[in-house]
Image 1 (cartoon, rainbow, N blue to C red):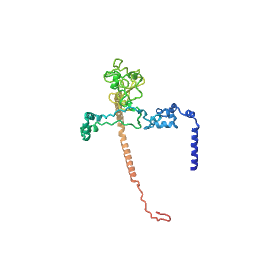
Image 2 (cartoon, rainbow, N blue to C red; image 1 turned 135 degrees about the vertical axis):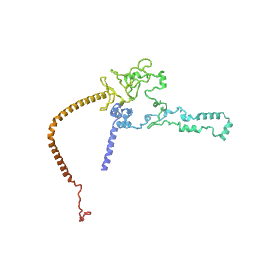
Image 3 (cartoon, rainbow, N blue to C red; image 1 turned 90 degrees about the vertical axis):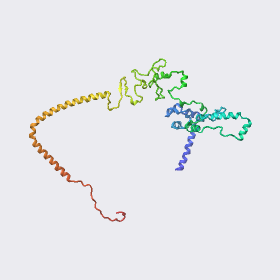
Length: 379
């Protein structure tokens, strides 16, 4: 069987290779998937690139690229020139000391020592070379200790799969920017000098809504209350018009600071017709001050008054019945007493008879002697 399998396998490979070799370059190109078709087939179309269509299995390649913590192939594999070939002839920037070392003042001490060496004569330089003086660059021990053990900062390290490429050091660091926050440089560039300036994108957001890429972003005047001292309006320094619907309800959030920042603490919501409906859990106990609490108190008072009237009516009926039954009671006392004594006696006899029979809890088995027969080990 193994020999048969070995004979069959090369034939299959040969047939596959022959099919591949039989196709011309034009046929191979026509058989490829386009970028649009590949994006429709995969679940992560954002990772699809132009050269992914030329792979032997494009869908599996895109699946591997979409997995978390996947390290991509460096982009310079498709470049014809060598890696970092464009860095030739570019002047390298001078090395800068970290800030926590520069704060010790070592740079000023070194520059002062270098100036003294330049002013020295050849005879003094030779004498210093033969018998050098130690301790020229001396920094206080406490200053060095604080620099390395108190003020030292961790340098920026490369992330997993991050590779250096040409021009990476000239890119802008976007991590220090926060969406919705105006820096001092941006305020100066936009010529914003007031203390509470409305951002330039406020009116467009009030018209078209907050940015969908930042669903949790709170923009004052759009889905968050205005800062203290600011007001709506189109005057100088005004914050535009609040985004509301035809009933005056906020469209995107608590722009009027009516509810709480926590959505679980909101005590009301708006219905489709514009009416305000209290928001509470089903079956919750009403608290003092609620409409349900007052209605429940009214219902309780009404039920108490009804129960009192019913009790009075029942008491009157009972009094009439007792007066009527007084005459008949004397005649039935003897017979009822005799019947009662008979029933009690019968119950006692039955209980006594039932109590005589005790249930058997276990059975004692008698020991039997038996000898082992032929072919038996234990009998």
